[in-house]
Image (cartoon, rainbow, N blue to C red; front, side, top):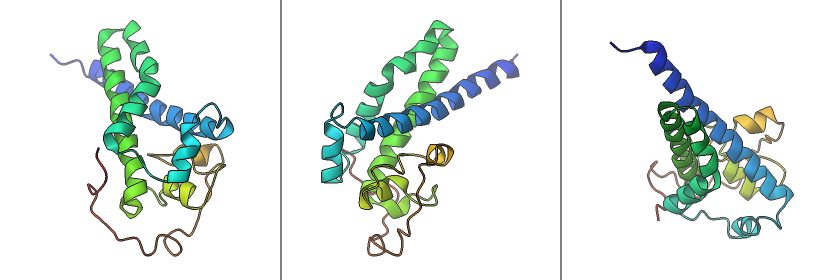
Length: 167
């Protein structure tokens, strides 16, 4: 017999890890702007205005949050696995979203405005820190709208969702 409350608890762990990972990613990105000397590759990323490719972005997100991915294993194996899968899902989503916003920002259909693209194109050192989602920019008051479709991005070709640098 399947225990639905048990399954619901594991789903909540997965979703919680996804949301928490987006929160960590937002704050790490924001800290990279507060302490650029501590994160010397980040100003270089802004100068180059390019992603590393999905695989390398994914590697960095996993390495940067790996400790937080494994802590729930101390509670239980099942909760740990559910949390790990949610965190890995967000790492993959963030890597995809980050690369997509550099290669194909018009394809970011889940956001009103591709915040990371705008963050770079409009040199917004203090705004729009989200990569995969823009929730935390709204929550913490760092969302800054730009008329990005009628200005710099109007001439960008619309590509398919999978047209981006993978390696």
